[in-house]
Length: 363
Figure 1 (cartoon, rainbow, N blue to C red):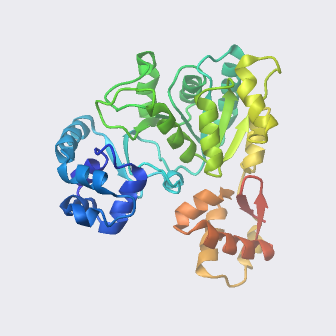
Figure 2 (tube, rainbow, N blue to C red):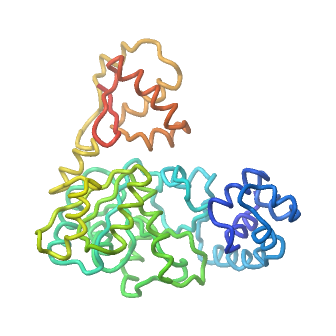
Figure 3 (cartoon, one colour):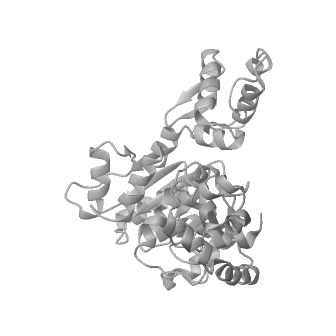
């Protein structure tokens, strides 16, 4: 599938991610979409006269040529949603971006990914929580994701860089700029051990409406979202709500009852939208990541009964570490409903056990 056609498909304003997937599934490729007539396009569910007309008459291919030049000049990776390097956790979300632009070296399918979000007006308490969180997580081979914004976001990135934790910043604009500009130094360090990721092409400014879209990537590419400090309204609560809608775990640090900066966290905990955590150890326990060393009993594993191929593959993955259902589904390329049956069979045989947060480990 031609890269220029893939990019061009995302350059048409009225063709969002859901419509783009429908078009690709119907026609089989981005090239075929642009070769189709308007009546053929209108056969696709959701593609009416207006959208089909814009596809036929658009200058999307010319816009895509501009992006190709930028990509080549800046050595930017383009990740299409069918690519192996595309974040598989995000791919499972119904409104995932069809295409991402990425500058960095971190594996976006790292086996442990945490999103850390919070208020732009971080207090000393919030920054200290970020510091303590990263100090502990540095020993557990994780990737930390945030939005490179003021406050908690940049504190999480800075602490990750300091503790040599790979960290990825998800941007609400193109890769031709850094917003806010004050964060350019940390962004440059992140590209060396982590990266910068966006769905927006170059020349896209950090407009207000881009930030909620950015937040769904932060929530969707992670195993869990941690809200460190948040006011009653703001992007952190939006990200938490999106993560919950994706059936991902959400955790929050509590704050004082009269503290405005913790009002959002306290609300999430009080309404059972987030699990309460006091420290990194609580988070690790809740995710089933606090086990160190080889999982399972080696003698017992050698005496396993004959298992179906799919269940042998599950056991092989779990030999190395406890693993969440999203990661298992992505690595095995198996639907979660089908995977759940195999997991139940293994659990009934006493081969694995289920941990909080839909995480599994060998018994």
